Length: 180
Image (tube, rainbow, N blue to C red; front, side):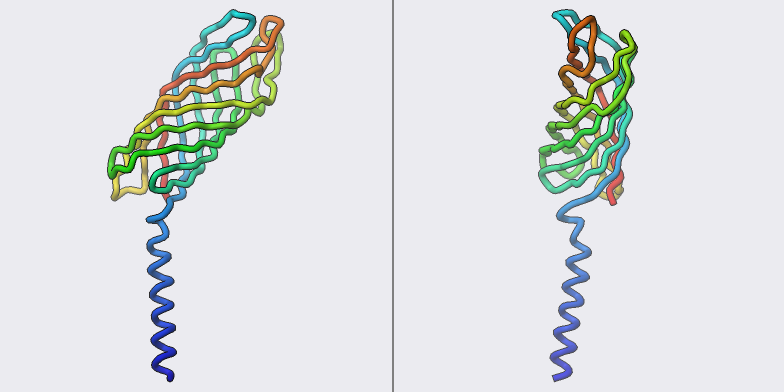
Protein backbone atom coordinates (compact mmCIF):
# COMPACT_ATOMS: atom_id res chain seq x y z
CA UNK A 1 0.00 0.00 0.00
CA UNK A 2 2.73 2.48 0.90
CA UNK A 3 4.73 1.47 -2.18
CA UNK A 4 1.76 2.33 -4.48
CA UNK A 5 1.29 5.70 -2.78
CA UNK A 6 4.98 6.55 -3.14
CA UNK A 7 4.85 5.46 -6.79
CA UNK A 8 1.81 7.64 -7.54
CA UNK A 9 3.29 10.66 -5.75
CA UNK A 10 6.63 10.19 -7.56
CA UNK A 11 4.86 9.99 -10.93
CA UNK A 12 2.84 13.14 -10.21
CA UNK A 13 5.99 14.99 -9.10
CA UNK A 14 7.93 13.96 -12.23
CA UNK A 15 5.02 14.88 -14.52
CA UNK A 16 4.62 18.33 -12.93
CA UNK A 17 8.35 19.10 -13.21
CA UNK A 18 8.42 17.88 -16.83
CA UNK A 19 5.36 19.99 -17.68
CA UNK A 20 6.97 23.13 -16.20
CA UNK A 21 10.25 22.50 -18.03
CA UNK A 22 8.39 22.31 -21.36
CA UNK A 23 6.14 25.33 -20.75
CA UNK A 24 8.42 27.58 -22.81
CA UNK A 25 8.00 25.29 -25.81
CA UNK A 26 4.42 26.56 -26.08
CA UNK A 27 5.02 30.29 -25.56
CA UNK A 28 7.72 32.82 -24.70
CA UNK A 29 7.29 36.08 -22.81
CA UNK A 30 9.63 38.88 -23.88
CA UNK A 31 10.62 42.50 -23.26
CA UNK A 32 12.19 44.60 -25.97
CA UNK A 33 13.37 47.98 -27.18
CA UNK A 34 12.78 49.55 -30.59
CA UNK A 35 14.32 52.31 -32.64
CA UNK A 36 13.49 53.52 -36.10
CA UNK A 37 14.15 56.19 -38.68
CA UNK A 38 12.04 57.32 -41.60
CA UNK A 39 9.63 60.04 -42.49
CA UNK A 40 6.13 61.26 -41.99
CA UNK A 41 3.62 63.11 -44.09
CA UNK A 42 1.00 65.45 -42.63
CA UNK A 43 -2.15 65.76 -44.76
CA UNK A 44 -4.60 68.68 -44.36
CA UNK A 45 -6.89 70.44 -46.87
CA UNK A 46 -5.33 68.60 -49.84
CA UNK A 47 -1.92 69.93 -48.78
CA UNK A 48 0.84 67.80 -47.40
CA UNK A 49 4.15 68.36 -45.69
CA UNK A 50 6.94 65.78 -45.53
CA UNK A 51 9.15 65.60 -42.45
CA UNK A 52 11.95 63.35 -41.27
CA UNK A 53 11.19 61.37 -38.11
CA UNK A 54 12.67 58.99 -35.57
CA UNK A 55 10.94 56.71 -33.09
CA UNK A 56 11.97 55.02 -29.86
CA UNK A 57 9.97 52.59 -27.79
CA UNK A 58 9.49 49.47 -25.76
CA UNK A 59 7.47 46.27 -26.10
CA UNK A 60 6.11 43.54 -23.84
CA UNK A 61 4.94 40.47 -25.69
CA UNK A 62 3.96 36.84 -25.96
CA UNK A 63 5.51 34.66 -28.68
CA UNK A 64 3.81 31.39 -29.68
CA UNK A 65 4.84 29.10 -32.58
CA UNK A 66 2.91 30.76 -35.44
CA UNK A 67 1.91 34.12 -33.92
CA UNK A 68 3.12 36.91 -31.67
CA UNK A 69 1.17 39.46 -29.61
CA UNK A 70 2.60 42.55 -27.94
CA UNK A 71 1.90 45.81 -26.15
CA UNK A 72 3.98 48.65 -27.54
CA UNK A 73 4.88 52.18 -26.47
CA UNK A 74 6.41 54.57 -29.03
CA UNK A 75 7.73 58.10 -28.86
CA UNK A 76 7.68 59.62 -32.33
CA UNK A 77 10.00 62.59 -32.79
CA UNK A 78 9.72 64.47 -36.09
CA UNK A 79 10.88 67.89 -37.22
CA UNK A 80 7.65 69.55 -36.06
CA UNK A 81 5.80 67.05 -33.86
CA UNK A 82 6.46 64.90 -30.82
CA UNK A 83 3.89 62.15 -30.19
CA UNK A 84 3.32 59.38 -27.65
CA UNK A 85 1.60 56.23 -28.94
CA UNK A 86 0.30 53.07 -27.26
CA UNK A 87 -0.38 50.10 -29.56
CA UNK A 88 -1.56 46.49 -29.41
CA UNK A 89 0.08 44.41 -32.15
CA UNK A 90 -0.54 40.97 -33.62
CA UNK A 91 1.88 39.16 -35.93
CA UNK A 92 1.74 36.06 -38.10
CA UNK A 93 5.13 34.49 -38.64
CA UNK A 94 6.52 31.74 -40.83
CA UNK A 95 7.75 28.68 -38.95
CA UNK A 96 11.53 28.64 -39.25
CA UNK A 97 14.43 27.95 -36.93
CA UNK A 98 16.72 30.95 -37.47
CA UNK A 99 15.21 33.48 -39.94
CA UNK A 100 11.47 34.06 -39.45
CA UNK A 101 9.61 36.42 -41.80
CA UNK A 102 6.47 38.01 -40.31
CA UNK A 103 3.53 40.24 -41.12
CA UNK A 104 1.80 42.32 -38.45
CA UNK A 105 -0.97 44.80 -37.73
CA UNK A 106 -1.59 47.08 -34.78
CA UNK A 107 -4.24 49.32 -33.34
CA UNK A 108 -3.88 51.87 -30.59
CA UNK A 109 -3.99 55.52 -29.71
CA UNK A 110 -2.02 58.72 -29.51
CA UNK A 111 -2.10 59.95 -25.93
CA UNK A 112 -0.13 63.11 -25.85
CA UNK A 113 2.49 65.16 -27.49
CA UNK A 114 3.05 68.53 -29.01
CA UNK A 115 3.11 70.14 -32.43
CA UNK A 116 4.92 73.35 -33.30
CA UNK A 117 2.10 74.59 -35.58
CA UNK A 118 0.19 77.54 -34.12
CA UNK A 119 0.40 76.26 -30.51
CA UNK A 120 -1.68 73.18 -31.36
CA UNK A 121 -1.98 70.22 -29.00
CA UNK A 122 -2.20 66.64 -30.18
CA UNK A 123 -5.63 65.03 -29.72
CA UNK A 124 -6.11 61.55 -28.29
CA UNK A 125 -7.12 59.63 -31.42
CA UNK A 126 -7.00 56.11 -32.80
CA UNK A 127 -3.88 55.01 -34.70
CA UNK A 128 -3.33 52.02 -36.99
CA UNK A 129 -0.16 50.36 -38.22
CA UNK A 130 1.12 47.58 -40.46
CA UNK A 131 4.51 45.87 -40.21
CA UNK A 132 6.54 43.55 -42.46
CA UNK A 133 9.77 42.15 -41.11
CA UNK A 134 12.32 39.44 -40.49
CA UNK A 135 13.40 37.97 -37.13
CA UNK A 136 16.85 36.57 -36.46
CA UNK A 137 16.34 33.97 -33.70
CA UNK A 138 19.46 32.13 -32.60
CA UNK A 139 18.33 28.97 -30.78
CA UNK A 140 21.04 29.10 -28.09
CA UNK A 141 20.53 32.75 -27.04
CA UNK A 142 17.50 34.30 -25.27
CA UNK A 143 17.74 37.33 -27.59
CA UNK A 144 15.85 37.91 -30.86
CA UNK A 145 16.61 40.65 -33.35
CA UNK A 146 13.90 42.05 -35.66
CA UNK A 147 14.30 44.25 -38.74
CA UNK A 148 11.02 45.63 -40.07
CA UNK A 149 9.30 48.23 -42.17
CA UNK A 150 6.36 49.96 -40.55
CA UNK A 151 3.58 52.28 -41.69
CA UNK A 152 1.51 54.15 -39.08
CA UNK A 153 -1.66 56.11 -39.82
CA UNK A 154 -3.35 58.46 -37.33
CA UNK A 155 -6.36 60.46 -38.64
CA UNK A 156 -7.36 63.91 -37.36
CA UNK A 157 -4.76 64.14 -34.62
CA UNK A 158 -4.19 67.90 -34.65
CA UNK A 159 -5.32 71.13 -36.31
CA UNK A 160 -3.12 72.28 -39.17
CA UNK A 161 -3.79 75.29 -41.38
CA UNK A 162 -7.34 75.64 -40.11
CA UNK A 163 -8.39 71.99 -40.47
CA UNK A 164 -7.86 68.55 -39.00
CA UNK A 165 -4.62 66.89 -40.07
CA UNK A 166 -3.90 63.20 -40.72
CA UNK A 167 -0.49 61.71 -40.03
CA UNK A 168 1.19 58.99 -42.11
CA UNK A 169 4.47 57.78 -40.62
CA UNK A 170 6.73 55.26 -42.40
CA UNK A 171 10.04 53.93 -41.16
CA UNK A 172 12.66 51.23 -41.06
CA UNK A 173 13.00 49.90 -37.57
CA UNK A 174 15.05 47.51 -35.46
CA UNK A 175 13.82 45.70 -32.38
CA UNK A 176 15.86 43.81 -29.80
CA UNK A 177 13.84 41.35 -27.69
CA UNK A 178 14.92 39.48 -24.55
CA UNK A 179 13.00 36.21 -24.09
CA UNK A 180 12.39 35.10 -20.48
